[in-house]
Length: 409
Image 1: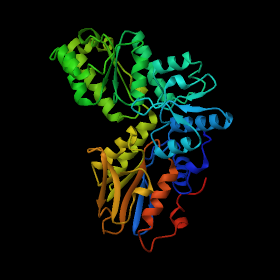
Image 2: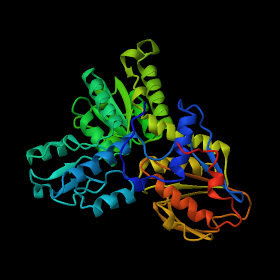
Image 3: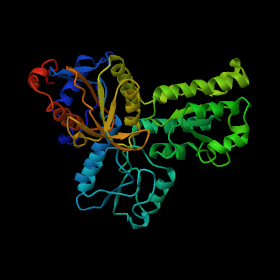
Image 4: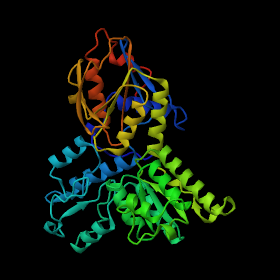
């Protein structure tokens, strides 16, 4: 039976949460990836089969709020943002939580200002061994209030096993992301480790494996993203690939296949078992489900997509990228960025800045709108967006009538 978490009621919703629960009961084995359709007549909202808070996020939120409730009067610090969602982090800050670091790792509060009486919560992304050690030296146990996602810890454990078996670890991730920094720190304790951002970088690594590129090429691209003393001639002979759990799972598989092919070219297919470790079991199931459900949304098609989430959320940005391949897509933090039926403010992933787009709602009726989000977005935010957009349409069906196919559970 799936575990149910105790998260604040205001993160839940009367519309989105109801649809999700109904789908979960009707399809417990998660075989049906078709979107849920809320048909209001002139506008239809298409909801992904899987989206929103995942196991790791709900686990982190439950632990964080319980920690606050159980420790009145004590100072509570988060190492960095709990998750990459501004509404969740703002709520925690309003309750007195303070952040020690920015998401990129820049200090906000000197660690030496902490005392053994203070509480330091490790966020869902985990943290580095170096920060763990510094907390311990201050008399703070970093594991007492540890909300690290179990699937991130699974990657760490697998990396350690690979290192102990004599493999190098290739991490598919963004080198500056909190989770990748943490995974890199844990991995290089036991294994030579290098971070690759995408297939292009993996292809360069493959050319080095094949002997078609040299150490200088490695240093230009990976010099700041590999463990100290990394020797490509020595350390790219036995490899296992793991990932930052919020990256595109399909790209991780593609990178792993490419690295395997390069090793087979170098050492022969008959010897591949000695040079390549299958790590497919480390891929996060929730990320995989959300991305597969997004593929189904894209295949179904729509007039436009609204993707809700924090702009620094890696998993949300990948959902945006998938939708952008098929339809106009607007990446928003919440209903406040839906300015009017004429204008919408949204984040442009390519330009890394906010934009205002006019004429975002086309004149065609009925209008099909994809509405989805990343793993760190509360259902309540999607309710707010849906209701605001719905208000721009006339003669819509009543909400209770639209929700009838999704009985309350």
